[in-house]
Length: 336
Image (cartoon, rainbow, N blue to C red; front, side):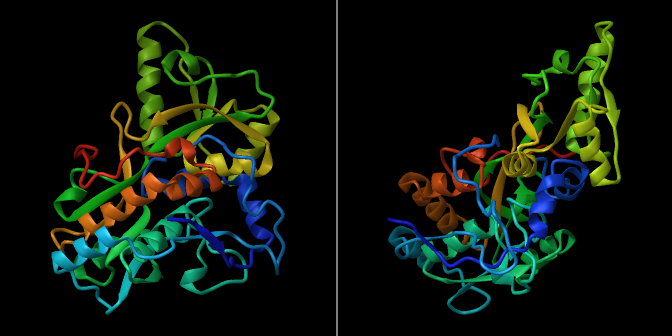
């Protein structure tokens, strides 16, 4: 199963500016709604030389439907809400997950890992990809009501969500510590590593809970806890890192990885599971029991096996978030 990388979409200069600040609070707050999110990777930088008219973002395509997935879909009895189409709920948040380049408005013009995977799933099932941009708050009811067949929008699997939806995993849920590119800090992976540091974090997020737990550990050992810094203004947060007024940013790893790769101003020094101390996975979701999730998982495992999946993640700099196998309804984060 070969990949063809076809037509892209016009990419405005504004996205470079977004990438420059996305390592700050905006990425932490915006994406935490969906999950708690790879190390910069690969030599190719997607859309690194953006302009308003001609730049393209590669789209990944299969040679054709995956027979096993099509057979499983037919056997399941699942009926798409639009005949011959797979209606996929996607977000339009920030790169590299999903974003709408400047000057575009059509749902199909959303770029990133999540719409790429939604498109590949549709192709593998032999259906037409029918993306619908939705606000984060709107997808749960949309999936339950049948307005959307599938969601690929950075959704973390939780035990509570599994009561209403079926999931097929496709990425690890990771958090990342990022520091200034010339910072002497080399590793942050445990409580002892944050002693006395000033760390930017989003209020009320999973990553804040990690830091608070680590601070408790430090204080119990008679050591200096980290100073947590909260910013409402993304530019101020970025300036704090670059000026040395903050030592590190701790947030969803995917977005920070993109910013580090695009700007070169920051570097990754540590990865922590999004559900620390537990692990969690990002997954495609469907309505509970409608028969679609097994065929979706077959497609995902097929693209994992043939290398399409790896190439896609490498293109977006998220290879550190790769999984070895897509699992239907994997263990999710426990109910709070």
